[in-house]
Length: 453
Image (tube, rainbow, N blue to C red):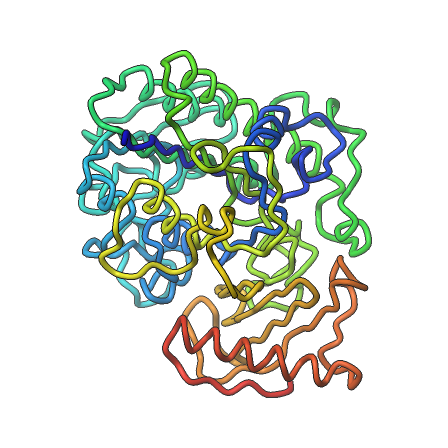
């Protein structure tokens, strides 16, 4: 049986509700909507860690960020860990990686060793097992802005690009596909930075004209009701960037079809996390008003997840809760590759074919940087805890947590009314606390105590 090609295309900081297939009214995502119509859309997909580096570490290994030590940004992926790419290469696949890496540089904490690859080429031993096509910057916002910059190739040679950044990153993926000789199946990852805000400009950079083109946007209800933050000003450029994410995915799909590769390719689209546009974490230890994620609210945790190809066909919609921590395990299962060390999560192809029985319909998330936090979400509730007096930039975990928030999602879908101290919800909270304690023990092998705040 011919092994499938796998394309993993993901954006950075993109809310699920930016796509038409999730209810967006503006015509931002015709290509992804088409994939959802013919493939599988996961309605309730969530990030396991809403920060760039830690989530990427999970994507590259199928292990929790705390297992790897990559619990915050600026911690390098351990070079001796078995990675998704190394699994594929060991099993006869060609690999390619394009875009933002964010898993090589270290530092940012006083008295901590620093290795800085933010503007230089990443050495081979820090590339997570990718030995093939490579067009990468460790922290892409440091080597580019929305309209130009540079990346490095597999030989550490600089490649400058000019034009809208998301377009140029996709052009590198097209370059790989056009050079592909078909001798081996391939696993290609395309890591776009859009629609993440451009740090040094302190705003989102959509294609020129986005403010005018998308001025008729409807602000998501959570952002509208919370107020504050910068969504009113930034949303048109944010949406413009999301539109280019979609158009460039379409460009890759068209190339796959032109090369006769589409029928044997499984394509995954998701994002590392969402964005709350500085409406949450206002009391966090990161001066949270400047924060966009780093919280367990759905605005940061909930992400789009659309898959097309292989068993992911038929225009299905999955309403069960899933974590994108399951993606590496799913990739390997689709390629018929056996895990050497158990990966976290579940095989999503087994979920859609109905062979995962008695699964708990809930997800678990680890929160870092803004706090040392843990959370779980069910269909009906969100429960989060944090470790008081611990800096989330320094400590990966804790043996002691207190209540942070509890939401009744059926009656409060936008998470506006914190019920964690409401006596009516004591029994609900006690049940969720037990289940979250079990999640922490299973994932971190640590006995914890959780108490009222």
